[in-house]
Image (cartoon, rainbow, N blue to C red; front, top):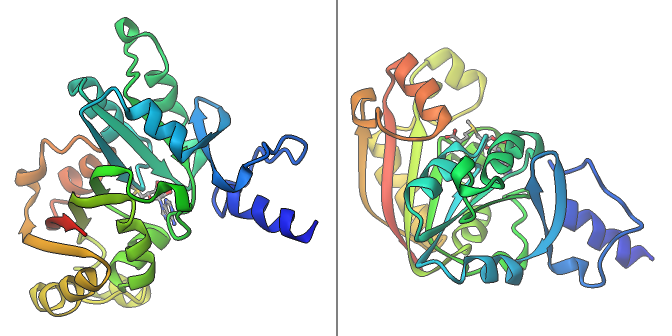
Length: 248
Ligand SMILES: C[S@@+](CC[C@H](N)C(=O)[O-])C[C@H]1O[C@@H](n2cnc3c(N)ncnc32)[C@H](O)[C@@H]1O
């Protein structure tokens, strides 16, 4: 009984706490994720996700996808790529997942899926699934993990990528460049020295080799399709740290 409770809490994880129906755990619940479609959620396994993605040429995963518009827009534009959006906040996924579930002629995208789990506790069967891992404008515990940096958490997120997968990372520096706010939030000063001396070596230890990094201004990101890119960049005009590399 004790073991079962532990497994259930791992399944639903922190951030995905609504909708738990203890009467309905499938037999193999340890390997189940929570797929969001509109306001509903359904258990789905990592292998079922792989099957959904099998007809497509590549699997792209967006970690901390928020409202999922990055996933939805890319999926609509790239019919040969399967896009997965992951977020701990189930409600944020409702709208994009509902749009994606429609028929293609009505704006649907069969090549998009959305799952809810805490990225600080990545389920085992998400390992080695993606050809490209995106982290777009992380916030909250996700941001702290990437900037502290928390090597263990980064390693488990990186492991979502296959060996040789591409990695893309955007961090808006609005709060980092406001000294009062930065200190209040107990954040490091993310400048060139911190990126090269702390972040890149830590990411390397966690299994991500960074090949390029740059501090971008708002104009360079004006076409980024995520919602927070629009909010943070177009309005604040602050710099964004951009890093790309390979996993594994
Ligand atoms: C600023 S929003 C960015 C959303 C989106 N990537 C975009 O660019 O529009 C950060 C997202 O990270 C999610 N997040 C924060 N901590 C998380 C965690 N531990 N696991 C999964 N998602 C997390 C939040 O729920 C939020 O939706």
